Length: 87
Image (cartoon, rainbow, N blue to C red; front, side):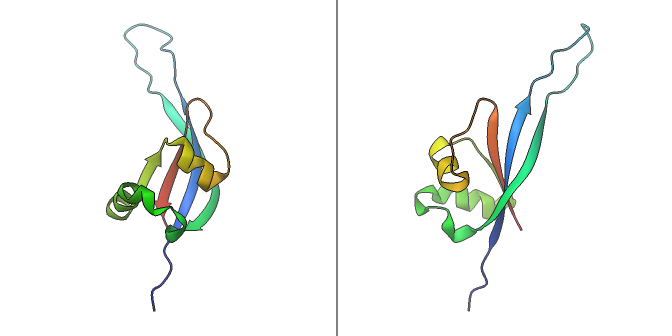
């Protein structure tokens, strides 16, 4: 009997920081909020490459609007992405 593999789904937003003073570098950052937890087998097989990367690296960032629509029920806004991580 196979145990179900669960994936944590985070909605992340990239924030670009404008350097306030020349010669001082401030890194941009992302903020992420956990949206849900889904079974790995609910990700459509058309996205086998993403599934393989997720299994190999334990997490993957998604910028594909169609996959976002299937996973979180809406398209991504500007500077947003989905982070998937194995539970």
